[in-house]
Image 1 (cartoon, helix red, strand yellow):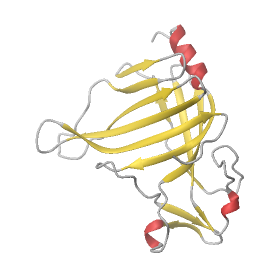
Image 2: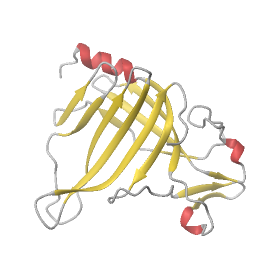
Image 3: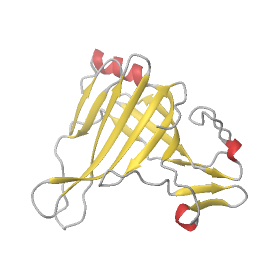
Image 4: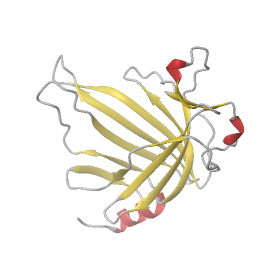
Length: 193
């Protein structure tokens, strides 16, 4: 693989710590409630077990991006909404988390890796990346394909989007399965959307 000057500039622009917030959306585009809460003194509690809870759609996030030689690895953490010890996360939870903050870690994602991936990058840190060909399962099971892109500006802020699509069963088209939208700033935090 050719590691061009533009790829090096892209990796340099995105590498580091990012603070932010994220919202998940279902197939209809409706934001989904954060599925877990951290109840002080109890631990992790499914939101469904809390009938009088307030809906929370935005996660506070922390993201680290490192150069892995043939791409950039994105490792993200999401802080659980806290009940009973709200001071555990400061107003800028994306960058100032204490050890006592309950969190969920996402599976790391590598952007730019592999010949089977189409990708476009800019020296400012914007990208689009995804499978060159969308796949589908032959046995009728859902095969999810993820397409990712990021819009970055000169201020150091960016918006990352992941679209999960699957083949429609009714015809040869594709449909949205879910989406994630991240609003982030390098070295700083971003409050809710």
